[in-house]
Amino acid sequence: MSDEIPKGFAIHTRRSPVTDAWAPLYFRLAPPAFVLALRVAERHCNGRGLLHGGVIAALADNAMGLSLAMATSPPASPITTNLNVDYFGKADLGAWLSIETDHVSQVGQNGFTHALVKADGVPVARASASFRLPKAG
Image: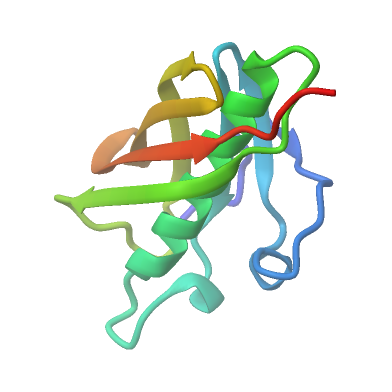
């Protein structure tokens, strides 16, 4: 198991009570994506020693919301109105988990996103979300 952080990633300094317990988190900007990542540790795992699906859901929601915010001008503060996650793989202890948004669109005050979740480069989940964007002004 390597503790190496892949090239292009930096410490994600945006704080949240939800994600503080999972720190350190990492990010990389790859427009339209705000890529979030972490090295899977015991604190991220379920009783079977695998990454908990709730961690994937929360981080995917975070990554997609930040990607949508990055795509708006000025940056918005999206509010999640729907979140779907399809799980089709697993992430083991020590895996490098990355969540990369690959679709961002906006129609009026509604934003729509999709993301692929990978563990050591292998897809393990797919997420999609809808957001409400606050009115400008």
